Structures are given as C-alpha cells and as structure tokens.
Length: 82
Image (tube, helix red, strand yellow):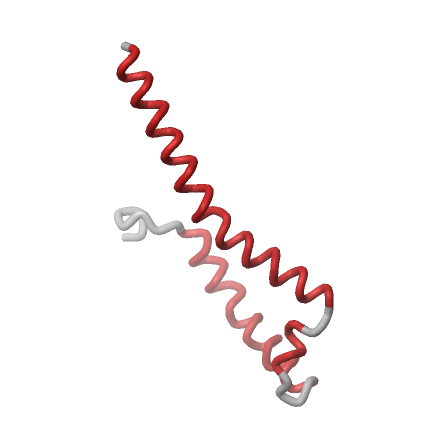
C-alpha cells in the first residue's frame, strides 16, 4: 500500500522502532527537570542538535525543488537537441 502511495518505508519503520523509546526518554528528562521544557534547548549542544535537525528537515524541501527543476530543464534541452 505504501509503495502505491509513494510513501517511504524507512521513516515509518524508524518511528515504530524508536517512538516508544523516545517517549520514555522525554518523560525521564521532564521528570529530572521538574517539567521545565527549557531543558530541551538550554545547552549549546542541544541548540546545535535542534539546528541540525531543522536544517536537515527543511533543506531537502528547498533544494529538492531546485534539483528537480534543473533536471527538468536539462531534459528539455536534451529533447530539443535531438
């Protein structure tokens, strides 16, 4: 079903395998910090990891469109050259 809908399987499998463990660790962190959410972004290491995660999520959306456009333009040039 996922192949027909063109949905990648790897993120789904990772979510199933790691989701429960991530939730347990989030609860543990909230317990240790007495419910203070700033603990998740309070250190330079955590800020760096958040920035890397956000860039890793946004960059493929931005650059993917540019790459697809470049591929389409190149395909058009090849088609016109024949």
